Length: 266
Ligand code: C5P
Image (cartoon, rainbow, N blue to C red; front, side, top):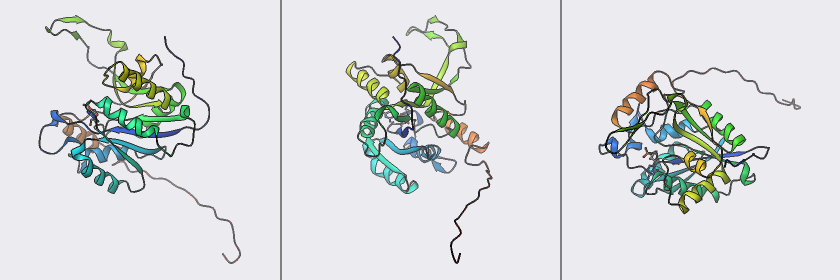
């Protein structure tokens, strides 16, 4: 049964949840993964800069306890104008997201009713997300209640058993690889997480929790550049993408004007 979550009309408010409490074991090395530099800047700071659009009103970031002090200092220094909250990281990504959701549910900044509150969830390890995709996924979530960014898979996918025997080859034309950002109306994602916890279900992305709650999820086609930095080679690939001209190296030119009332003597 697919439930219908028609969104209430009117303005919505958006906050971002950024799970950043992973161990980064597959990256190896001494420096924690998200504090490693990518083209001269920490991966986490790059990701937050990519999320730094006016539509997003607050950041809720989950961090592991040993890094909490270092990360919060670094982030607060880089984003002095932002409302930022830190939550404890959990055992799994889903637990880290849930801790941020709990903090977001208590946020004092909400001005709209719950069904018009949008939560955008984005992995700290994906610094190459672009603004247009963020806006699209927010827009879709405010219409359907749940939306995720992904790309059609390029490889043929096999379902393989523990004995390495192929069980099935699903039709590639309807297979997508899901990424983040994913965005949701607050009541939808809150219910989905509470249900998953009640059933001890662990998913590797947030849309899957919403799907099993019976709500529709709408895909937004993203970019193959929006990689998750997991292993050392990913850092090199991301550096090349940045060099090729991400939003940061792109020169933008604009014109504007300013109008003032004429006052006596001025
Ligand atoms: O482990 P995975 O690659 O799925 O992690 C995706 C994101 O979730 C990363 O940004 C990572 O820091 C975060 N994470 C977390 N808490 C965990 C595990 C992962 O916040 N326990």
